[in-house]
Length: 163
Image (cartoon, rainbow, N blue to C red; front, side, top):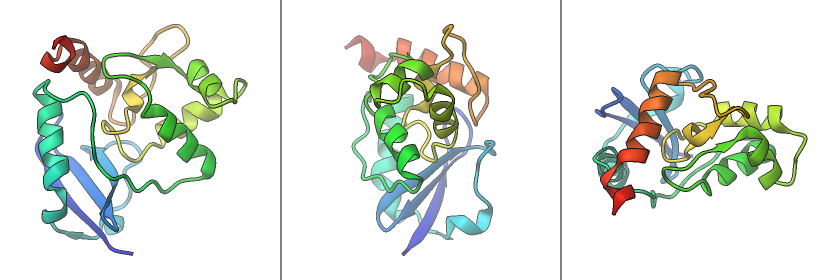
């Protein structure tokens, strides 16, 4: 197993991208809450991240609504089910933890869905920021609620969403 990383600039500050065997395995915003220890990121190698860097720049410019990158999830089967469900939330839209739990056939698992959502290792690309509390509130986000707010505002006002 080969693990490498890079760090790129973004409007949200530095993003650390991690790849495992050619797939994007991590995208961490700054020093977010569940960021793994430095040793887990492997050596720095910018080369495998050209497409991810380009697509993230397009996203932040409001010109990209979907990512087309190979992903390398590494979680429990339940976590990976939740993370794959997150990929189905359209750009500029939101859902609730309860609705997400229902969408995966686990209507009573809202709290477990919330925990899995919070442990999503591939932020932005796997859009955990699009999940809200049942009352529509901006509940926790590993990179901070203000970051979550800015990402949602970007998506609601991005050029790609209007086009």
